[in-house]
Structure formats: structure tokens, C-alpha cells
Image (cartoon, rainbow, N blue to C red; front, side, top):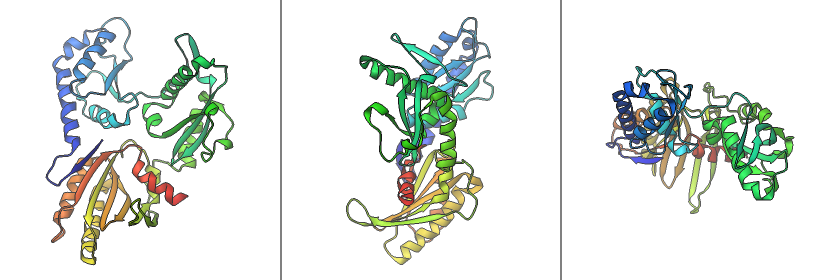
Length: 361
């Protein structure tokens, strides 16, 4: 989800908020009737209300019995079925759920508490039969999969599809979609640079904790906001067109990669062709970053100087707040033209990781 913003244009978060409000208004209007439905028609009616407002997102019902009215017993789980492009919509829906709802509201399918098995089209596969090795590629987790039981050749694709379902249920929708970048199968051959050779295969049951530990300790993703002073690294080179490029990378920001509340990347671009323009850009940057990241609402992740333009990137909790802070900061710098602003919901932090990995290599 990517949208360029001029200083006078409303960000896409406004549209998502309005869509969520329309859905919840429709739900409140039918609440009494909804509470009298059994779980299946209850879920069907909710999705009929949701689809016109927020396409691509569905709601599942958990915690209610199969028979009898759901009343206030249900949990409403909003899911984008692993499509990270719709994660901002899911978060908007759950953030704006009315306080008077009788049902608990959750974002994304959560992890299963333990191992399980499934049967599809006559083939059985359980979590203890899916073997996993853990590695990393481009700053994200990579998984190498194999099976502990024979899989007929004509069922290989079917078994792989089931393996992805098991992973989604055991890791949870958000973590599987955002933290895992690559999934490979042993029989296809594995990437040489992922580090899979350092691991013995383990069942998926035992691998969930290994994946969490790898993310936290090996990749350094503690999710704890880094203390001052933060560590920076610098890159210099040429881009694909052969033009000079300089990048400053906040290495300390790596601790926050893919934290669910820092899913928005907001960038501000300003001309920096001469000393005067560069000074204006730096004055703007200081004011904007201080405002956008106040109270740990975000972090400045990297700064790119290319083609006479200086672009500052921040990952933040609220694109609205960061964009408004940028407009105010620009107005406070005498003689400065408005910056070009862009906001993108990027929960995997792909733009940052592209530069961070370059620094670490």
C-alpha cells in the first residue's frame, strides 16, 4: 500500500478509518439481530457487511458454540489471509471497534497453542511430521522444510500447500507473513547463504520457539526501543543509473524491525543541491524527526542522499501524525519549499532492511 502525499492531501489512513467506521456503524445497527444468530449465519452476516466496506479482509468467529445464539460469547478475528498489503485495514478495523460491542475483537489469526494435524483430500499431515531448519536471507527468517514421512510424487504440491497452512497456524498470521521471507524445500535444493547447514531438522512443534529465539537473539529483534545514543553506519556508492548515492543507516533501529505498531514508513524528500538547501533540509529533518518520534511513536531509520535530493525515512505508529508533523516542520523553516511526502504501510520494513543488510555484509 503506497501513496504519495502533497502537503494538502489527506493520507490513505483517513480512507481506511472511514471504511472501518462504516462497517462498525452497520454492525451496531444490526447488533440485536446479530446476537440472536448461531455462529455460522452470524459470521456470514458479518462478512456480508464487511465486504463492501473493506474488501480483502474477512472476519472469523471463535469462542462461540456451534448451536444456539452467539449472544456475547464470540471473538471476532479479522484476517487478511496472510496478505500484508491488507494488514493496515485489519489494524484499522480492530483499533476502531466500538467500546460497547459485546464481542472481543482481535487482529490476525493467532498462534495455535500446540501441535495439530490435518487431512485434506485423503492425505494426512501433522506438525510433528513437518521438519524445519532456520536461517536468514536479506535480513528476514528463512525456513528449510522437509517431511518425516514419505510423500507420493503426485501429492508433493498438495503436501507443500498443507505445510504452509501448518506454518500459518503455528506461527500466527502476522509473524509468518512479515517475519518469514523465504520458505524452501530440501528436495528443491537450498540457498547456500542462508545458514541452514548450522541446524539439524526439528519438528514444527519444536521449531516455533527456535524461530522466536533466532528472531530475537540472532537477528537482534528485541522489539525494545533502543536507548540513546543510537548507532549509525554510512554507505557510499552508485545507484543503478551510475549516479552517486550516500545512505545513513540507523543500526539501532534493527531492534524494532516488523514490530506491529511500527508498520508505517513515512518519508520526506527535499532538494539538497547546495549548502543553503542542505542546511534547510537538515533543519527540517531535526524538527520533523523529533516531533514524529516523540514518546517513542516512531524512529528515524535511514537517510538517502541521491540526485541532489535528501530523503529521510521514519517508521511510525501513525502516518497521520508523522505527515502532519512534517508539514508543521516545513512551515517553520524560512524560505523552504514543501517537502514531497510519502506514506507506505510496510510491516516487513523491506526498505530499511535493504540498506541494513548492506551495512552488515
